[in-house]
Image (cartoon, rainbow, N blue to C red; front, side, top):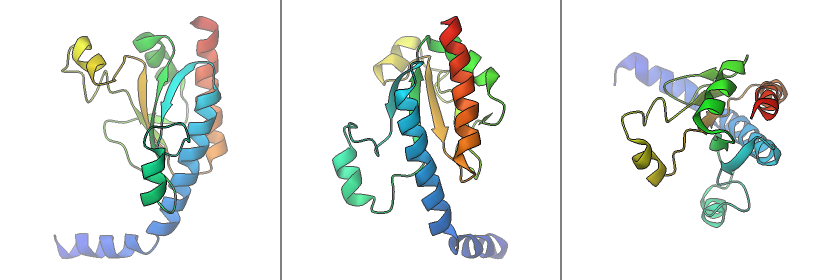
Length: 156
């Protein structure tokens, strides 16, 4: 590690607890809201009580469950693409984890080299979206996501 990189780590570590608290709070908020949306088939987030890993996550993640989650949109790959196009605040990015909320579409990015059958066998449908909750105020983010999903309800 270079001296400059070490300095950046040292500087950033001072506020890590604040950023992780916001990241986790936004993650659980978005997971719960997505779980209730009619355009969403499923939400995978260890902070949801019905999640298979909830018990373990609760034991080892004392201060929140983080901000990484995934959700599957009703309507498959076509609906996922439409959802992404309709977002105005949340950005589609190749690599998650940022101070801003971002998304990824695994069927078109990280897992695009797999056949549909291979993706399905590991739980990656065409409608799957990965989301990294940022640390910004969550209300505008949810409004953006909800509006993009809401427009799908009418077309799918």
